Length: 276
Image 1 (tube, rainbow, N blue to C red):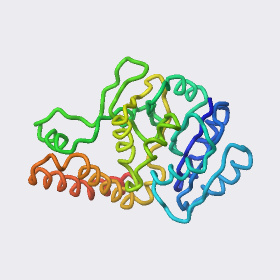
Image 2 (cartoon, one colour; image 1 turned 180 degrees about the vertical axis):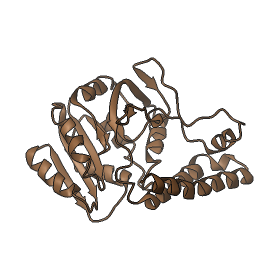
Image 3 (tube, helix red, strand yellow; image 1 turned 60 degrees about the horizontal axis):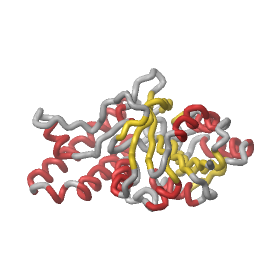
């Protein structure tokens, strides 16, 4: 079994070394391709040093921030042929043992994720997700729907869900090719939901491995540009809503959802600024 790892960085100097160090003892990893999206911190210098020590590591330094999905596609295109593909955030630490367990669950066309936890051990609810359905979500805010974008953990080792986080995604390389990679019209966020939906439409299983935990230090690169991140996130939400749900709703329902998304934007920017 050969495994290629695709990583997209932007101002991840604080985390990329730990991310790659965690993979260093994983014998199944035959290639690591890192695409850097115009970092102006120490990220590129670190990548250059790390690549000189590990022949599996190669990186591409982009002059512009081309976004996550397009960056992953670029990394995969620059990767030699492998049987399996791991998409990994640069602020994640996935040990060789945990990676081996994750790979052991991959059987056929599957998109597998892991349980994501922060430094305090708190589980990220985005580890297990439902499809993003905006009208039920809006109704749930008024107690009119039981819809939740997240799924509770069950006792199975491999739990089928509708979507997982793009921070950790393992799949056959052939499935990624069949999906034609990520939809590059999503610049930041939501592209993982879109890929999971399209994978299920092709008959693939989307699931989270409950016996694999991965440290995920969220928001390292986004804290310095909260408006840029939230703007692109909410644009992605609107695109996803227009593509997947809007056509089945009344014009007033579409207006209400769009208003909810746009009104959420300044609140999320303010929250991000206060946290930073």
